[in-house]
Each structure stands twice: as C-alpha cells, then as structure tokens.
Image (cartoon, rainbow, N blue to C red; front, side, top):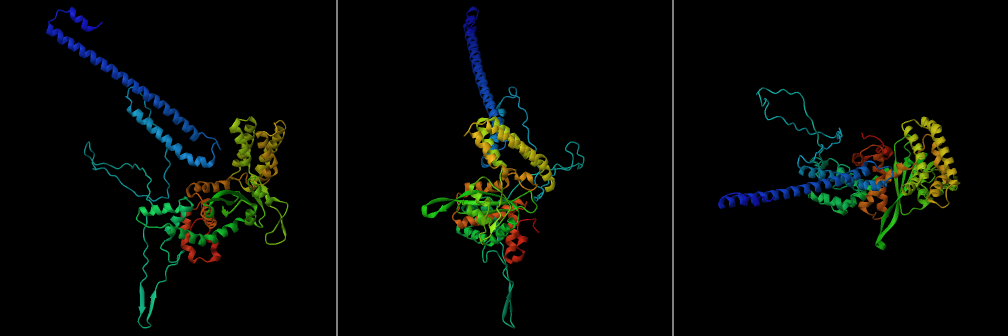
Length: 537
C-alpha cells in the first residue's frame, strides 16, 4: 500500500501532513536510487565475473599450448617466433585478471594468492656490486637497547649496461739522440686492420652483432649514433670485409679437421641473394657439414656458401673424403653414394660414401599423417619409433662399445619388429594412399636407416646439423638476403667459427676478441691453437 494514502486517515494538521508527506516521498526516492545503484553494481560485478571467467579460460588455453605441446606440434622456427608471444599474452592476461579482481568488493570474490614460480639463481660468473642497506638506527625502536646482528637477507637483481663506447689512446714518446741525430720510439702495436680506428672490442661487437645476433649494419649504425658515435655503414662494411679475409685461414683449417672424421652430418638451407641485374633476389644455398657428437674430438660445424643446390657443390667440398654421411633424402647427395666416383684431381676411382638416413625425417612422415587424420597406423608407427629413441636416451652417456652392445641387444630387435610390421601392414593398405607413402619412405631407405644400430658411434638422425642451421633461418628474417656471392661466402666463414665456438661451450665474443688480438703476430704453424676447440688461456 502506498504510505502517502494513509496520511488522509490520520488526524494531522495540514502543515504537519505536508511535512510528513515530503519526508515519505524523499525516503521513497532514496530507496529507488539505492535499488538502482545495487542493480547497477550487481550488473558490473556480473560483467567482471564473466570477463574473469573468459580470461581464465583463455589463459588455460595458452598454457596448454605453451606447456603441454608435443614434439613437432609446431615447426621449430614457428616455436621460436611465437614462444615470446605466448609468454607475453599469458602475463598480460594474468595482469588483467588481477586488475579486475582488485576492483571487486572483498565480500563478493575470493582471490587466492597468485602462485609464483621459483626463480633460478643468477649466474655465478657475473660480477656482483653490493649495496648494503643498514637500519637508520642501531638501537631498538621499542625499548631503546642495542640491536644484535643475527643474519642477512640477500636478494639479487640482474642489470645490464648497453654497449659503451670508449677510446684507447696509444701514446708513443719519441726520443732523440743528439750524438747520432736519430729518433727512437716504441713500435706501433700490431692490429688485425692496419691503421684502423677500431679496437678489437669494437670489431668483435660488430661481428657478433651481425653474424650471431643477425643485426644488419644499418642498425649498428643507429645504435652507435644514440651515443653520439658516427660509424658509417661503409666503414662497418669495410671492417667486416677485412676481418672475413683475416679469419678465412681459420675456417679453412676447421674444414680440414672436419674432413679427418669418418662420419659427418650434411644439410643445406636456401638463402636469398641479391641479383642486381634483375632488381630482385635469386636463390643461393648455405651447405652445412657437422661432426658426429657420438665420436671423440671437438665439435665442428662448417658452412659452405654456394650459388645453387647442385650435387657438385657437395662433391667439391668433400672431394676424396670417405665415410658415413648422414643426410636427408635430397637427390643431390645420391651421386656421393654411387658405386664409384672419380677423384676430382686424378683418374683413380674412390670407394663411395656410405649413406645414413635420418629417422627424424621418417618419423615426420607418420607424424604429419597422424596430425591430419588421427590415423591409427601412424600412431602405432610413432610408438614404435619412440622405442628406438628411448634406447638412444638410455645409451647417451655410455662408451662407444657399451652403446654398440646396447643397440645390438635392443635396437636391432626393435628395428626388425618394426620392419616386419611395416611390410605386413603395407599389404593391407590402400594403394596411392598417404599411409602407404609414409611407410614406403621408410621401407625404401631401410638399409640406410638401420646402419646406425650396427655400430656404437653413428647417430640416429640428422637433428644436430638441422639445429645448427636453425639460427640461419631466423637470421634471414632480419637481413633478408645476401648482397653478393662473396658476402655469402664471408658470412659462411664467420658462421663457421662462431658456430663451432658455441658447440664447444666457448663464448663466441670472448673467443673472437682473444683471437683478433693474437692473430696479427701469430705464426701460421700454430694456427690450430687459435681454433675454437677448448677453453681460452
């Protein structure tokens, strides 16, 4: 019932009745305003809860992709490109959820404390700058008595200083002999670039930035300009060209050492090369040859830049080399495995290289088939191939002899069972199907695929050299193309040296700086001591 209607039933003075009516009307309007406010607030809370739920599901989706993916769910380069995007997106979503939860009333949403992942300790080799934070007073703030040190709370933060440019001044006092009228001064310190203004630290920064961090020279020019240092691109290019020539003997020596091994990995990747006459690019290739990690000796990667993908490029590099060569199924390598081939510098015939096929490529055929159609035959093949890799993991730290015994005991029977299964399954598979093609890829290469298991020092796949090529593929996104064939060959020299340093656990920048300091006066007979094989002196 309307409370204003009851006023007529009360015996009140007109003035009092008017005042009471105004008060009641005010209370009614206040109630309506409060009801609308509550309704609006409930709608806002509901909207935020819906958004939090949506963001929570989105975060779970990203975490599933980021942390629960299986091998080869994305191509390696795609994983490199998108991984930082996933991490950034997850952090942004978590921040949005926290902001929304902070706006919620305390009695409407229960906010669990956000779990923090354990942070790894910072590298011990980095220099430490200590900052001691003492209390303002050495007496207790409550009772006034002296405080006693019982321990320390230590936390660390990682910091960095961008590239700092500074100048070395070489002062050579000149002394004269009045008796014989001669002048004496200390000799000019030898340098890898005679008369150049760049110290070895600057040359190292340029080379590592260009060939390891894949920064074009114009970006280095911009970085230096921010500190007021003018380094023209022509000057930077001159340094790179001269250093490429100076370091060429080291790369040649690495190639010589590599060809002393009796088993190698080989692969190639396309590289766009500028074709000035046509105003566009043409396709060149960076061939890669890598040592076998299962054999003793330092690890070596050698890059060979060539204008094409013809088999003659591999033949020219390997020349009279003989041994086991692990490659993919590219036809350009087939000439190396022919019955006989002529020595490039003589008329005698050479025993052919022995082909090793890659189980990662064979597996990939079944993986692609399973991803496309959840094919049960492909799944069974993947499970059987996984057994082969599990045996390799088991024997990773073994000696060559022990690994050979392990493979004879486990790998060879597993391979025999896989071969029988493939042959029997093939008979029941429809012709010209994707399943049949995946099985035929392995069956046609079976001898080359199984040679590794007969030894203890041959690898199961070609992944080591593919991993070494992967940074080149990422770098192409930055520098886009090689300016000339000579530029590509120079890049191959530097990539060979820096890549080998990385494989052997040597800091490429530290090795290059040390080498550039020693190179001008280093005797050629001791060139092996400069190769990136071991720790620096």
